Length: 260
Ligand SMILES: NC(=O)c1ccc[n+]([C@@H]2O[C@H](COP(=O)([O-])OP(=O)(O)OC[C@H]3O[C@@H](n4cnc5c(N)ncnc54)[C@H](OP(=O)(O)O)[C@@H]3O)[C@@H](O)[C@H]2O)c1
Image 1 (cartoon, rainbow, N blue to C red):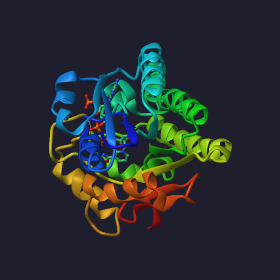
Image 2: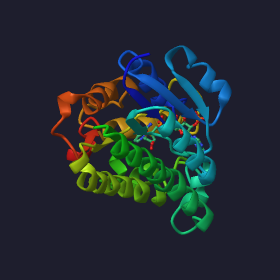
Image 3: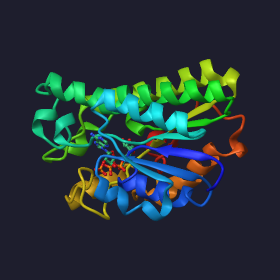
Image 4: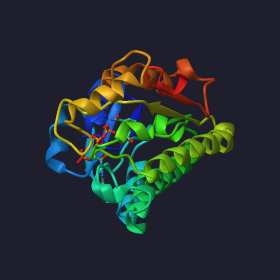
């Protein structure tokens, strides 16, 4: 077993799988996901695989408390998000005029409530055990800039308000944790990816509208979208002691989208 333990939520997703595989070279990985079959595919890279529905807050508390007692968790990557129509993605009913309270609540639960509760438990244990840990929140450029309305003209793909609100909130949480827990040697940073549509597997985040994908590419300075491998450098830096004086940051990996 490698000494430092890192917990990753949404481990079976498009980013999660790349995160698990790469980080397993340096850390012992606990993978959290909602589908045991998908988790088992990662078994050769993980110390433990845990099935957890982020909407079930009682189960979340119970499992994270058990894991924090059992292991000295050094790293936490809050990566899960529900990209489905349940949170207003890719459905006309996700538009602001129509989005339901239930969709708003789902967006907030999956995007901020669940990571906040997980972080609270993990940080408490880090302080108790004297672990100088690193928390990384996978945010989005849409916490910093608003989706361009023109991108969606005539399209069925859609990005709801609650996603932007949740990601802005998680960046606020990043700064708050960094400020209040810095005194215990705990660091907290956000990574804000730009466009990384899942072109490798079928998921809630894999638009197949070619014209829409071209529109996305043109919004970056590099005229392309990103690949999850392009997040690994910053992820490893923020987990490691090489970033020991970096905390409270939201770091964009967006091909220049937010600077254009
Ligand atoms: N891809 C992008 O363009 C992009 C851009 C900016 C930010 N991000 C952020 O990056 C993170 C990862 O996104 P991704 O592109 O890898 O999307 P993804 O493939 O849909 O991954 C999301 C993960 O969350 C899990 N999840 C969803 N609902 C859940 C629930 N109720 N309980 C437990 N787990 C649940 C999914 O489980 P399953 O594997 O079972 O589906 C999946 O593993 C998200 O926080 C997202 O907001 C992505």
